[in-house]
Image (cartoon, rainbow, N blue to C red; front, side, top):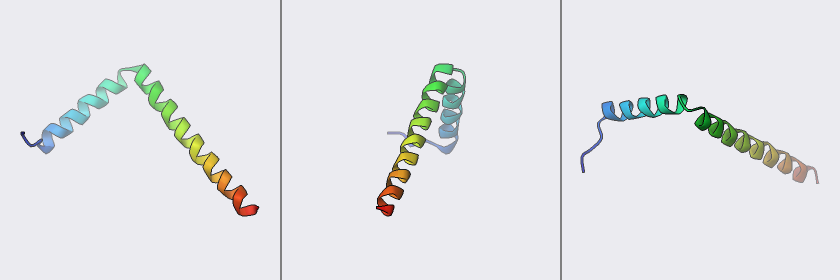
Length: 54
């Protein structure tokens, strides 16, 4: 198996980024995942605060 060079890895990242930025559906899915992740984090923090009060 050929070892990936840093240059080709950076090219791959660049191509993937361009592909994602050109696809609005992918952008929407990523935003939705980030919102869900943030919501869970806030909920967990609030839940921990309530347990500390009790």
